[in-house]
Image 1: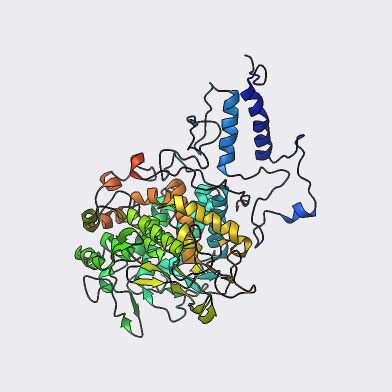
Image 2: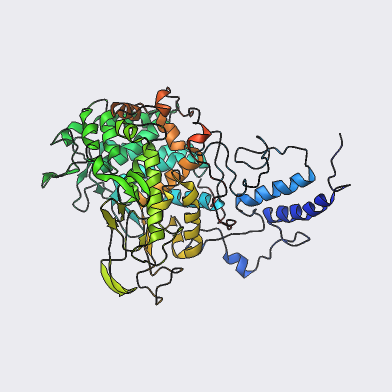
Amino acid sequence: MGSCEPTRGTSSRGRQGLPLLMAVCALLSGRTGAAGNSLPQGPEAAARSPTPAPVATGALRTASSPVALDPFFADLEERALRILYPTAPLERDAAGFGPGGTSATPAPEAIGVLRDSYPVADAAHSVPLDPFFADLEERTFRFFWETGNPRNGLIPDRFPTPSFASISAVGFGLTAYPIGVERGYISRQAARQRVLATLRFFAGEANQHGFFYHFIDMRSGARSNESEVSTVDTALLLAGMLFCQTYFDGDDPEEIEIRTLAEEIYRRVDWTWAQPRPPAVALAWTPEGGFAGLDWNGYNEAMLVYLLALGSPTHPVDQQAWTQWTSTYDKFWGTLYDQTYLSFAPLFGHQYTHVWVDFRGIQDSYMREHGLDYFENSRRATYAQRRYAIANPKQFQGYGKNVWGMSASDGPGPARESNLGGDRRFLKYAARGVALGRIVDDGTIAPTAAISSLPFAPEIVLPAALEMYHRFGSSIYSSYGFLDAFNASFPGPQSPPQPTLPGWVDQDYIGIDQGPILAMIENYRSALVWRVMHSNSYMREGLERAGFSGGWLEQPALGPTPPPPGSPEQYPLVQNPLAAAAPLAQSPLAPTP
C-alpha cells in the first residue's frame, strides 16, 4: 500500500491551496507562526483561564487545548483540502465535519454553519452550532446543578440574591439533568440521584389536592413569600417530572423508583378541584382567600395546564375545558408587524409549553382552521418582536435587528427618568412584550426571550445571541450564561447612555428564564426533550383529548428512539445565518464528576 503525496505535481490551485490548508490546520490545532510555535504563556495568557467568571468571555487558548472556532473554519479547511484531492470524497461525522457520513458538496451558498436536511436534529443528525452556544448551554446547565439544593432538589427562584425556591424552576431543573447526561456534563448516576432527591421530597411535600405552593423555603419546603398554590407552576413542575419518568427507562432500581414516584405525584393531582367555575381551571388558591377570581383562558403559557389536566389518568378535566381555553383566542388573533398570528405579549408564553411539547405538524381545531400550527405561531411571534425592535417606536438605545427580545424579566425600575427627549418610566419585574392592543416596553432586553425561540427561528436568533454576547460582553455574560436582563437606555455610570455599554444590567439569574434557554438550545441541537416526550403516554393523551392530530401523533410511541423526521421542506433550512464570520467562543467547561 502506498501513500498519497498531494504536493508532488500539483497544479497552481494546489500550490495556492496548500498554504491556506496549513494555516487553517495550525489555527485549529492551537499553533501559531510559520514554525508552529505555541502561544507564549505569560501573565496575559495566564489571566485568560477557562474558569467561569464575569470576565471569562471570548476565545480562551491554552497550550494543550485546541481552539474553539466557528464551524466556518472547519468548512474552509475541508474546501482547501478538496483543492488537493479534487476527486476523493471527504467523509464527515454526524456533526458535519471530520470522518464519517457523506461528503459536503461545495456550493456558493453552503458556507458558515453547514446544516443537514433536518432543520431540528434527531438522535442521528445533530445540528452544528457556533461553539459559543455549546458554552452557553453548559453554563446554563450549571445554574441548575450548582445552585440547587442536592438534598431535596429545590432550585432558587433567582441567584445570587438570596432566594426561596420556585417550583417551576424545579421543573426546568428536572428537565436539565437528562440534558446534562446526554451532553456529558454529569453521569447518569449523578442525574438519577438528583432527580430521586427531588421526587422523594415532593412525594412528601405539603400540597393542596396535589398542587404545590409557588414559592417554598430552599431547605424546609415551607410556604414562602405568602405565595399561592399555583396551577401553572405545578404544571411546569409536573412536566419536568414526566420528562424524567420517560427518560429514565432502565431496570436500575433508582430508575424504577423515579418512574414510580413521578407516577404517584402526577396521579394525585385533582385537576377538577381547581375548577371552581368549570370547565375552566383557576389560576391559584390561597388558604386566606380561597380560589382566585380569574381562570386560565387562552392564549398564554397555561396551555400546559390544560394538556396535563386532560391527560390525567385519575382526575381529568372534561374535553370542554380545551374548548373553553380556545374560545378567547379570537381576541388575540390578528396582524402585528407584518405577522398574522395568535399573540401574547411576552415571548415566554410562546415558549414554555414548547419546551416539552413538539408542536411541529400537529394541530387542534383552531389551528387547522387558521392553516398553521403552534410551532409556526411561535415563529411568527418571534419575528414580530424582532421587527418591533427594528422599528423601535419608543427610540430606546441598543435596539436593532440583532438586539431584541422582551419577556417576563427583571428591570431597572421602578423609576422615572428624563432622557432621550422624554419622560421615561422604567419598570421593575414585569411581563414586557408586544401583542395586539398591548405593548409593554421600557427598553429592557431579556436574552432568554430571543434565545428560547431558537428552534422557531434560528436564522434570526443565532445572530441575535452572538450580537448581544459580543457587543456587551462580560457585562451581561458570566458564570451561568446571560444575566437575566439589561437596559441600554437607563442612566448608568456612563453618561449619556451608550448602546455598547448598558446603563443597567441585572445582577441575578432567574430560574424560569434559564430553563427555556437550556432546553430550547438542546431541542434545536438534538430534539432531546421533544423526542422523549413523544413517548409520554399522558402528554399524548392530553394532546389527543384536546383534538390534536397529525405529525408524530399518528405514529406509535417509540420510547427514546425518535420517529422519522418530517420532510426537509416542512421547515426552512438555515444557510450561513451570520452576516459575517462568527467570532471565537469560550472553551467548554470541565465536566462535573
